[in-house]
Figure: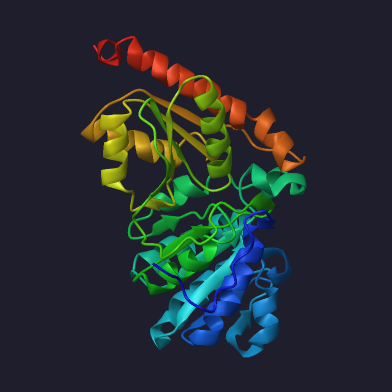
Length: 332
């Protein structure tokens, strides 16, 4: 399957920030469709949307540092039949305008798309106030709001197209720092479907966003220890891919989740909730341990907060040990 011809994909050997991929996707889609407008809170330079604003200035509505007004206006603008794409920093757009997102946008199931950069420890030097570690939890708890997370700059291009085509409100979580290109050609993306990047039946590593590359690295090192690890890019947190996770439970029998987010209410919680209902297996959640971040390079912070490659490897071995020692007995 191929994606839109307008998309200009990055080379596999590049490290590109997801916000740069987002900016490229906006332009590509802006050239072939005129049904969406960008709503900006004076952060176009930091979110990747500046090139779109320069090419299509008449399709950008500027609100200044007033995210609550922006979100409420987007809800009203949707009545025009056009699609508002609300762009901003996650800490301020999701948290400051959370009530407007919940009540003005999602309560009425309005066709508004929220695309935010600056999230998790990936933000790096900007520090704790800009490192959004709670957004998956708050957003997936809002009825009717879908939550998706791309893992690389190439994936974000067809994902944005899928977001625009999806009825109702969608939140897309975008990274800030340069990241490896995982998909040379990602193909079409369907919201609600995960992607199996690597097969294995000893343990399944389910990751999202910036931690997908770390999961792949961990799986490679586990192979050297004779451990066969499956790697899943859980690009759609809500709706979640029931069938893929069920197959991980039945075929691998042990799961590690890894995310750049608080351990409470995040992607790991979503996976644990599902497995507890359909097929309980040992799960290890690799996430930030209920703490605020701090300023530093993102790769330093990943290690400091326990969500890096070695943390995934350690958790995978622990999950396998629990499986082999009779997980069912733990439940008694």
